Image (cartoon, rainbow, N blue to C red; front, side):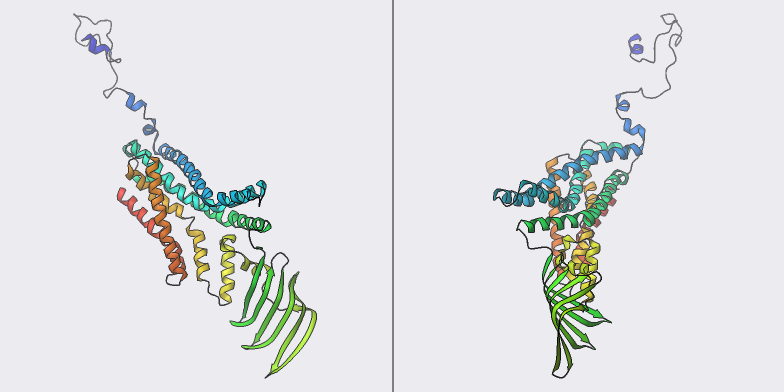
Length: 409
């Protein structure tokens, strides 16, 4: 009897205990009925602290795998292309170490635009696989959290990563790409990024072709055309042809230099007048002309949209450029799609193996980009709307992610 009593700290013999004592006379009153406090409750402070702390705990657990994934994918992509190219130029003595470092740093922003969505997928998979393998997901559900709330931090983090990637792609990447191209031109590895060869510009007025401009080259740095020919139309008929050695932008207008004007008077009669300097009737400003010498990667979405609008006004086919425009938003928002896919897959995996998560991520990313490449190729040919071609992968994988989350619930 005494051994049983002393094994419970809240039941201790009182002063009147003994063989002749009445039952219960020597026993001090114990705590209220219920299980004694044990290590199970002392070592689970999260469950007593409420869902808010649990969600913050998930965010903390997501951060480590996400940073690891960013570092891993960045090293893979940089080592496979940029670093190899720079190392070869360094060995050949084509660039100095400082120039190579500058090109390397300028190349990182465009790499990060591709790395961040992939890192979101791998980081989410690793985090939720570990939580599931440690039965922490089960414990969170026992604390009153639904699976939607358990997976909500992954989706919220994916939204933040998507917004950051869009901002990076709109501001840092175009400027970095332009600067990188200029450095590569200076060391003789690229054509002059400021010079556009065989420039052709169409200008419309009232829906009809007003001017057709052809130039042997356009130098964006000097804001000047060389070997320029301008055909002017009136009432749908060719009315005037101007040929000049140069056309320069000065303050608010273009000026021809050293040229001749041929005016068509009717029939076979043509009048010609030579000039040393004459105002040019060209509506395009230098910034509009310069866009033609830039690739879509060197333009922000807004600049590309303006360029597409100008080309469409000239009657040019802009289908492929529209696909590039929609991709500038679709690729960054792959982070959100991968967050929707990664969380339920991580809970399903029930294993915390980094190699398994990495392999699964590579497979999903491969399928994602195969679908994107095929849909963009179909859209380039005009067999699919450009917006659908750019967003098809996001639509398919996003739908799969939402369905998996719904099934988990």
